[in-house]
Image 1 (tube, rainbow, N blue to C red):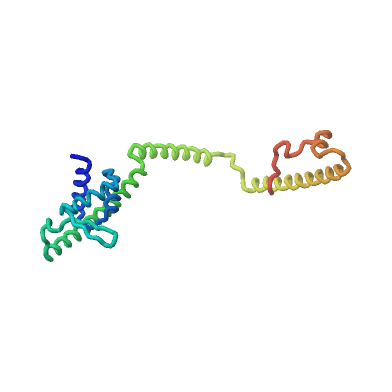
Image 2 (image 1 turned 180 degrees about the vertical axis):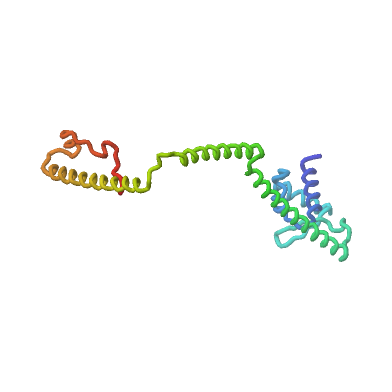
Length: 212
């Protein structure tokens, strides 16, 4: 079969299958990707089919519309059309139901894929039991310890800490004021001054002043 005859056969079968009006451009657009038909070949094939009487042609101004010869199809009465409509409606309902089931199954699949397997759950439970056992041992040691600090002793330590921190802040502020006064008449930088007098700051020791 030649390429021309092949194009004619493809277009003839397509128009009969779809059984609706198309322009040559429509047919070219719909078949070009699948069959690789050129637009000129499509136009010539449709004109040939029309001349041979295999398809019908209608002209609307400069536009030509082609469609299958309706005489080749069995005549359908109103009862048959109604039956077809009912069948289409029933099939549409089935399609909707199937699509809904597919969405539900897809959601369930995603949940299952994100869940742990039986082996993973068993391993996780074992690990949690081991952790709980370790925590119980630690708790028992803490509860049985005899060196607990009484609340009043803890309060005393906290108060002493506050006193020391306040004194630390006071002395740091005094030292800073003294250095500022000296540096007003000092010809070098603060860093050079500290190096010459051998003063090590909290920042040099990476010590942070606690908050009270």
